[in-house]
Amino acid sequence: MSDESTAAGPPEPFDLGKLRELVELMEKHGLTEVNLRRGDQRWRLRRGPQEIVSMVPAQPAYSLPPSATNPAAPPAPADVPAAAVGLLIKSPTVGTFYAAASPDDPPFVSIGARVDPETTVCIVEAMKVFNQIPAEVSGTIVEVLVKNGDPVEFGQPLFRVRPD
Image (cartoon, rainbow, N blue to C red):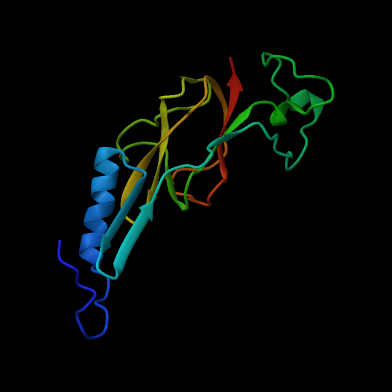
């Protein structure tokens, strides 16, 4: 590769088509980071989760009267509300939440579904890149915290999982 830093004139703008192609290649090959350098131009792309699952219990938005609780649910410790028990699967990126691969397909998971770390639980679409989100934990889905088509933020809880 020749050194292009000697070329005179203003720097060329980023080629959006090349950027999109690079993001697609990263997705296709499962890459999380790419660093490219040519002369004075440098491109560095990172994608993917930094931390998806957390054991931080969420605070319930409201409390249900005792008659509204599910009698078949396993008992929770007395000092922790039932809604706060479990692991959270969080969004690794900002985007749009999709419960299924297409509108005609069934959801990847629903309440009561058994998941393992490799189970795809949803898709989060960002800039036309559809990221399959793995559970990264083993257990049973006990709560779906977002609706299909909802916008989600980085770190936003998507599912609550009762661990094995």
